[in-house]
Length: 437
View 1 (cartoon, rainbow, N blue to C red):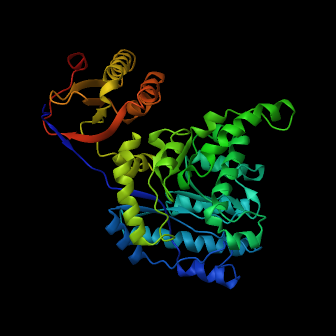
View 2 (view 1 turned 60 degrees about the horizontal axis):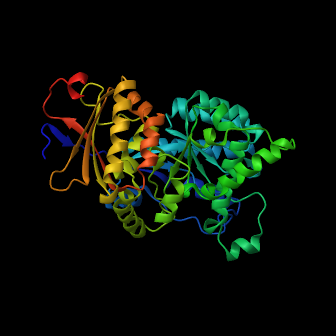
């Protein structure tokens, strides 16, 4: 079998979880004796070493955020000045290395009024690519009512929010000396902050927020079933308000920084869609050689979980941050080739699912220009699907339809490997929907 007029087009890889730690930030933290506040040393960082790591790992662009601790030492004006300095340095670094760095601005929380002022300056003047928010700022947790003005503004701006765990407001110092925060408490901290947002219906009330959860979803996949089970009981007794948990969770994005084991990835896929999974390194908190090796391992394992390496490492981040997608070459059309290997004993069942989703999609979705399925004659278990969508909006709408989700969920255990190839045409022949059918 051969395809004529199609060539694969890769997209630059993006790391959505990395930290910039300039001297100005370190000087402020050291001045208040807070350099060990998180229970472990803040690593050394410089832009040249970061770029060297990116080149070795094959990363084109890194999204920079401020690390922990949150630079608030009781003086809101001082905190605002530290964050302003940090954000301006990040903007300058982004300008110095075009295409290599994006940044999500730091805010001087828990001072909400000053945080709003800095968010406006960062997004409107510095052209920040998003906002970084700590799980809690000295006891002020994401989802708390005092943050409502900030959430409303960020929703208005359709902002990307990178979240990151910080030291809980109350913690046993002896315990974290023996068991570092990063090994357990950070995962619990992220989970409690996100569940607090869900309990307060933040993500449904502010649907244009794009919130990224770090570290493979932390404990959310394990905590959500318990949360859902307790919610109606607590609501009936007047202790909680009714919320649509699934609607809130569906708006979240997740990075794979940390231990992205096979079990962690499978667990994460129980709570989110593959289009909401992103690559993250956590540089410089892990040594560069270890990160390079971990990334190579991850790339080889993604397909075994039904994930497209190009989407996880490239396209999902590009869509999240509003970058142009290279596949939009033939007008606004998106052309993709899905290369799928099916378990041989499940081939007939898979083909039935594929026929149903193709028929329904073509009949009911004007934005689906064509879905053309093929089998390898020598290896019938290898299936190829040429997908053509009118534009990115049509593609995004398609993967949210009930018939596509039925196909995706129903065939998950039938697929041995999946490779999605974004393409650009070499032969510019007009596509006709009736002819492709």
